Length: 177
Image 1 (cartoon, rainbow, N blue to C red):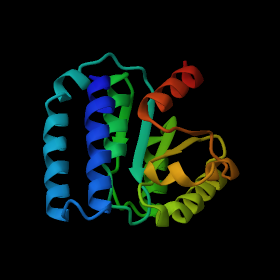
Image 2: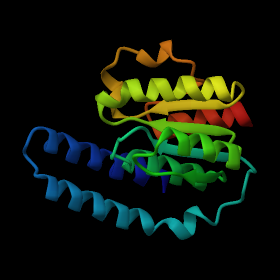
Image 3: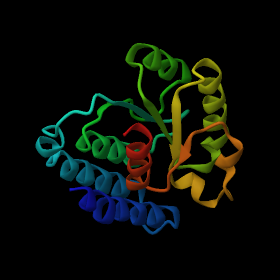
């Protein structure tokens, strides 16, 4: 199942995004591809949610007004498959809602996703706010927007940057046991 998510679905959605960016696909076709991918993902939910629990919690979302959420949704599903309890907040989540969810859910790890580069400063400010309010909280970032930033995340007070869900899961497994 993880291989299908990363090697088929994620790659397909990345290609769809590239085609949209180059004006080869129209937005309606991009939305259709997203909808089909979400339907395919839902077919794995029985398997995903039947895994033994690890008593660890992930809170995940896209930041600011970012509407692209497929990558962080896949990440949440893959963490759930690894036995984590996940609190997936979706796209366009206000900072206040994230802070409130952290207070309520007390996650072990927060994963923030950015697809579009204009939202990188929003993510950085959120990371700094989270670190200030929750100094012990583990924070990870990732998403397409980071791929061309020349390691911008190294200047942020995060615990981990991951270029893929499997990389973050591997880091989390070694960090949390």
